[in-house]
Structures are given as C-alpha cells and as structure tokens.
Length: 459
Image (tube, rainbow, N blue to C red; front, side, top):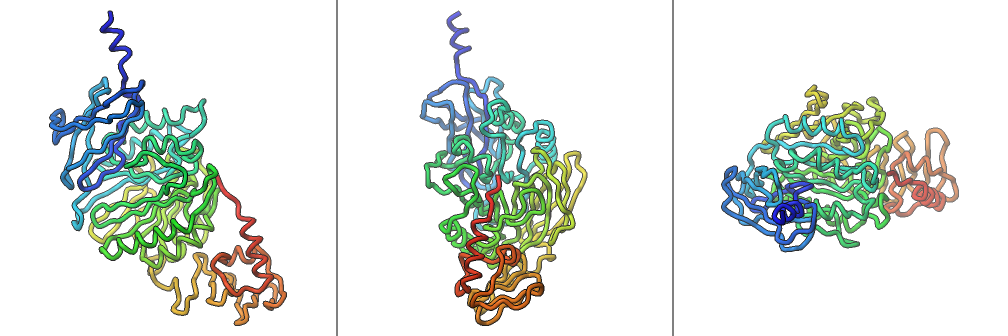
C-alpha cells in the first residue's frame, strides 16, 4: 500500500519534452513534471533504447532543463525522460559542423493559439513532411493568460510528438509577453531559461550554410507593446555582418514583420529601422507572423513570408496589395529547403494541397542589397519614398523634394520649407523616418512628430 501511494505521488511528465534547438555539439531539452522533482534525468544514446549517457537537472522544480554536451555534428541521438510513465523514445539531430554545406529542409509556422482543431491539423501536416531538420515558430504559440482556455496545456498536448522529435527555434510573439515571458523563460529561453528585465530576447543561429537572426518586435517593458531598440538594431547589424563575412545565406525572423496586407498591417518601425539594414546585407528573406494568413511578397527590395495560419482565427488578406506575390487566408505552413546557396520553398494547406512554390530570393524584388543606400547617403524607404541626405522627403506618389527641404506633392502644389504645411498622412505615405531625417523645415518636423504619436501599437 505504501509503495502504491509512493508511486502515485511520484512526479510524472506532463509537458514536453521539447528540444529547444541544437548546435553542432549541444542540444537543450526541457520538460515539466506534475510535482517538484530533484535531479530530473535525461538518458541519451545513439539508438532507441540504447542510452549510454545521462544528464541531470539538479534543481528541485517542476520545470526542468538540461544541456546535452559533447555531441557529434550532424548526428542523430535518442533520449528518454525519467519521469515519463510511457517511456517514450524521443530523438533529434544536431546541426551540421561549422563550414559544411549539407542540404536540409525546415518547417515554418506560427500563430497557433486559440483553436485546437486547425492547430492540430497544421502539426500533423508538418509531421507528415518527413524528417525536418528543425522548426521555425513565428510566435503566438498559445492563448496566454487565459485560464479558461488552458492555452499552454493545449499547445504542449497538440505539439507533443512534433516537438520531441524536431528541434524548435521560436521567436517572441506578443502573446508570449502577456505573462511577463514566464512560459517562454521556462521552456524556450535556451541556454539560461530565464529572461530578467532588460535581457535581450533576440539571438541567432547557424545551420549549415544558413544563418538565422531571431529578432524581437515586442522589445518593451509593457506586455504586448511593440518596440525595437537601437541596441537590437546594432546587434543585428554586427551579427549579420559576421555571418555574411563567413559566406552564410542570411534570414531574419520576427513576429510582427515589416510588411502585411492583412488585419494588423505593416510594422512601420521595422520598415524604417530594420529593412534598410537587412537589404544592405543581402538577406534572402524575412520570416514573420502576427497576421493569421499566408502571404509572400516583396518590400524594400526584400522577400518576405508571412506564416501565420497555424490555428488562430483567420483574417482577411488583400492578395492584390502592393508587392504581394501570393496570399491566402487559410490554415497553412511552409517547408523551406536549403541546398548550398539555393533556397526553395513550398507553402501548403493542412490537407497537403500546394498553395505556393518559390525560390529565395525570388528575383521579383530586385537585388536585395542594391539600390537601398545611395552613395550620397540618401536612403530608399521600403515603400518607395526617398529620404534625401538633407532630410527632405520624396513621396512614393510622385512628390518632389526641393533642395532647400521644401516638399512638393502632385496634389497640393509646392510647399516651401519656410512654413508650408505637410500632413502626417503625407509623411506616413512617404515612408519618412522621422528619427533619421535631419534638416527638415519646421512644418515637416511637426508632421513627423505627429506621425510618431499616431503610430498605433498593434496586439
């Protein structure tokens, strides 16, 4: 009787395990138990059921994470969690050795929250794709902070088999921030598994010849509020410069991306702060979520893929919007294949039907690193407007900047810099970067300030 009671009281696996990314010689495993447990153990080896090594989490906690070190690059490992009453064998493959260029494919999906049935369909379709090297999650995994929806319980239940066999590389969505990143820290914040206030939530990784910069479009102390710091921009520039110097194919990942023709619309801050830097470095594509649709298009000389059809309620999308190459409001995911410097992809419905096929860069956007920063310092904005070196603005609708900073528009005549008025909407349409412009007349400066105040934070 005492033995039975002891067995009933023993901690059991209730969430996970999750493989939170791998490198050529490491893997991070997280899981949660029903009760606090000391020395939670992962046993691992090179074959199912043949576990020659083990690692313990020394903390007495319900949330556990361990690092498996000293692994071989490009090798498959099997593992089991000691508190798993089902004794499931899980597995992962480490990243290729640095400097090697093997072909691989990965899954791209996101915005799974709220609706279990379509979320499950997306997960099952990803599993049916066969072995994926890893998954990129574009954010908003669960209906966070809603006790009636049990969002995280649903997420881990539906994704159990997928996440115990495929490494996950997620980016931060606005819903992840709503509980102060509590669940994010416990499960996805490798290697520290903690996000103290002020700690950056952006990072990067290599997989073969590909390099991925995971950016944070909600870098704010206020949950669910958008923001991109200059510190993040500087980190991104240095990170991508280093990867480019090593000959890597570059990608950027963030939740609310710079371009969308759906409910939330474009992220103007990302357009102004990030896009010119990405384009100048020849980034192959931007991967993003936030709007619950599939959309692929061009902006600022860059290809972008919006993969937000992972299960959340669908939004409408303008498939004829400027720069849109293909768009559909349906539950979907994408599979991207990298073979040396060649990148191809296919977007699919949950029943396997093909939505879209593409190559990255697509060629429809022009040369990714060409024509963005002019030799004289002028900057071409993503929507076609030009910020001249003296701070003047050329609107994409044909407005002309006078040498003295005055603004002329085709529908309002010439507006001199010494008092002519220009509306915030005119500047919004022009792609004006108020923080970067210098030498504006007082009226344009006032309009820029009004534009900055008018930008709404989207959730």
